[in-house]
Image 1 (cartoon, rainbow, N blue to C red):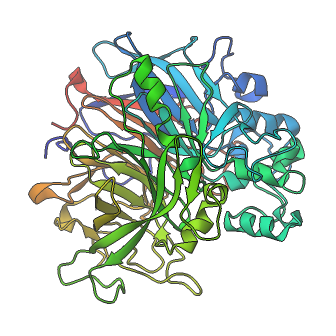
Image 2 (tube, helix red, strand yellow):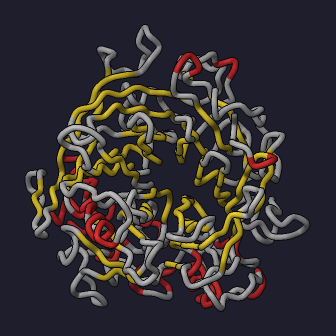
Image 3 (tube, helix red, strand yellow):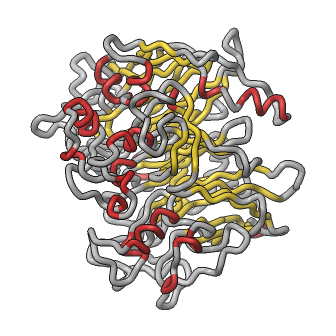
Length: 595
């Protein structure tokens, strides 16, 4: 299969990025490397908040490459810096009791990085440039809130009585690139940064916080000790200012980044764009997103403003408002099997139909309409989970990355796992989520009327041990596949193959990056291209014709290990501390990947 002609990497537990024979690799950038001018070299033992705010942050997740206008061979590497894992950032760290210095470093270590990089001639290596094009957005950077939530009673705070300017982004998980040259980033597990939900006295506000899983008392990171906006007893509305899709313009470091409330508020894994190519809806932009928690939902936003082609100033000024005007929908799924019990139909395939239920329409003049009885537009924008509950959306097995294929337009969703499926008091199996106590996840394939409200679907993969009866690899011979578990991030190669990175492999080996054939007799063939170091998660990825990038997140993150007892020494080796990093992989001689 073109794009998949490489020797599959076997399962392993090495402390290394393991790649096929005939390929090379090099770290592009790692935690602590300088990003902004004036940034010092990284010193693990002498970190400061000021230094970290100018350096590459911790736990890189999504990565993307955007060409620099007019500078051949130069790109913007845009990267999410998802969350701090303090026991691996500091020796002697006391769980639940960070010093103020440690908390401030953690606040500076998260967010987003935009780094100019240059391709090295004759190889696939990329090298960062410390210069004025670069950006570092942290938990303290200002963002502009747009859409129906902006200015509403739910987002006003003592520091921002207008409810339009938010300090910070964090929990930035996966993301996407837009045709107009910007980056989209999903704020996912934002609840982990707020404490004292049990002390919120307003019963309605407390109920809303509970729906988003905020901690009753102490939170994981304890930022509220030193910045009271993270203490819900002091500022309960601050929590409502996170959980959005963020848009960043790498071409203009002075442009204020935006949080789009028109796309709803949830634990957005990412947002990815499809542009309708034909028919009366040609030029309509559709953004797909998943809410990454057990039993949560799949969303899409259909723009009312059509795209202008090109990257001219006029086109960019027009397109930058696309995600503020349109309708937000949530998905419902039904199965072809008569009882929706999760038992495979005679064909062996899980398949069915679905529809998109409208939640919210945002208009060009700033007005908005709720499609959910009893909820205002601002309520739908801020409390989107409750709106989706009200219309009967289908509860899914943790929707992670959702990516439309640039070749076929079919939409693929990674449903990573759900160990609570079918347990006492929890939702039972259904056709799209067919396994109780789902430890390995599945890949959902949607054939969507992108601008419409109807679709059909099929499970491409039901992941796990190929020898198990409850797994399915697109109908391909399961004895000939690389076992895959817990799919997370998705991408496509130029040949139309799907690439999947994993998080939390339940099969006893390191996480990896897999290529999956989507078409023809080899549909469902799954081959492991690489594995990441022990304890790490595979993120990114970027799949180009001659280069692959992966973000290696939390190397060495194993139980009973920390900076005082590291399980990994990747990427620097020796006795060094592990450092999350972005890695480039290319083929010897610079020829095309997998052909």
